[in-house]
Length: 353
Image (tube, rainbow, N blue to C red; front, side, top):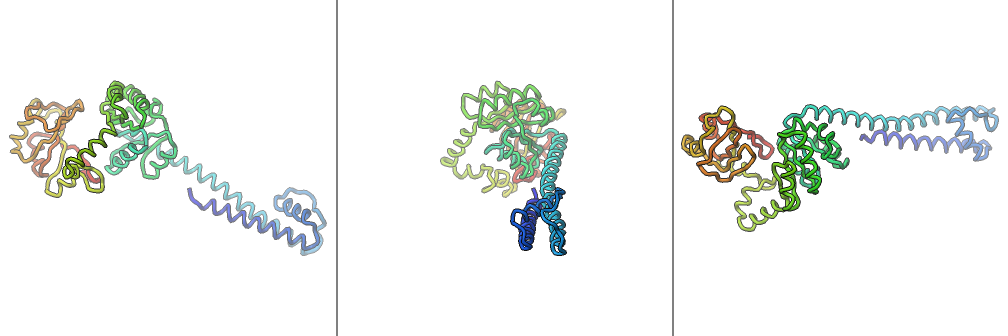
């Protein structure tokens, strides 16, 4: 909110008090008591209409009274105007922000709903914002929602386990829902509610304990991320394989894997097997042979969401599978043309490749 209304109120109050003190001093100078002078100033400025405390007969007293009316009333109006401006500005800003948020949510399609803007949720939201992926943040803490708004994110206050909140967030149009609260029970409730409202949405849930993983999956989660487990594995990699871990890390300080690969002319791509592709029913080895091995297949994500690292060449391909490859840009483009594969947009360092 602008500081202009506050400055106007402060200046108005200072001027108003100065006028009142000067007027009281003026009346006292003409022989009035302090109490009579103060009373006269008050009823004069606010136009109460009571009779004069003492007769105003001399030209000097009349000029003083006129000055009190003009300047005192003007300062009072100026100060009250500041309060009104403060109220109107706040309401207008709230209305405009609410309208902008409603329009933004209504326009979301195939988006991600991030439940919780805590330590983990804020990191995920920042990465989504950087990659220009459509998303919406839901959090019960109004201060966190304000923080998300200030960062340029679309966010709303609400309980993500409530059906009305998820409906308002466009759960029926969402592609992914990530519930990243530090409470397994709350995450479970959100998974159940989201799955009931949209059977096809992909649900990613945070888990705090090993015992919660199976329960979260039974509640509808497609993937469960154990934050402590991920951190522990990262620490282990840094201890045992510091060079490889440095290459694979994704924080902005040292760059991500695609940034490192691009330095040597390579890139990582996701190639999707779409309906009608001639590769449906064939194996990965046929891609490698027909592609003349100008690339490396590093993983295969099946249509059910399961990921196979370093898959066997005998793995059969089906509609919806995604082949993750590393190779030269031209080689990957040629591979797509030969096999009618669809390249997925992969974002690294905020740029799409």
